[in-house]
Picture 1 (cartoon, rainbow, N blue to C red):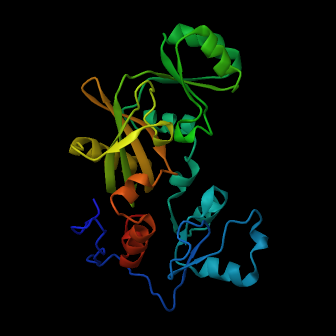
Picture 2: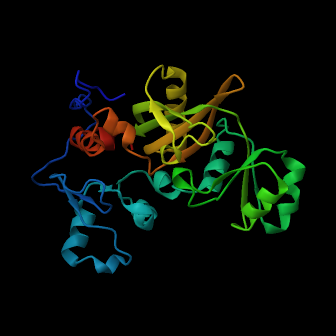
Length: 287
């Protein structure tokens, strides 16, 4: 994980590999489209515009001249990749964000431990109760961040209400748990891991749903699995959620818009962590 001082602040990363190429602050400005690094002096943030021709000729020159494009957004990640431009985060990180169906398919294809999950289009809704017994989890395939759009289904009536919300049903087995493990990784390196404890009477551990953060006794094997999963999936800016059960770990989902509360509690500045990785060359060395 990121080195820390006694006060919990991140220590500067040291460029120690010949393959790493520190940022040339004077002659090679780095361009970002998304706003996450806005205010960082070594980065020119242009914003995400719906039409590429909305960027001025000068801005387009900066984009094509930059040795890496930071936070290109889903709008542009695949285009820059096709053009051979280096980007951060990876195109996979951008394209799998808030895509539960795609994430589940990828986890299965990579043989990553994941709760039993099935997708049902409208004409197959009648098969759900043939495959799952109450209780089970139902999620909106998109727009279910911060615990919204996640339901514990315990009756046929609750299932009907859920199916009224979406034509595509994302159904997952319910794994009883008191807490889950959140691991935040940047450039495939774990920078922070903590437990999220669910509130009494709530099956969700999300902080926006009343969950709480705990840093004690974080299991190294869970963090190691998260790092392995991030590398397999090529997710290099992600918060992975894991549940321990049945003698092993299950990866629940990948969050590309992970919260920063845990980082703030530890005195970590996400913008500064990414900046130090950029300046040391570590951000681009692991692309």
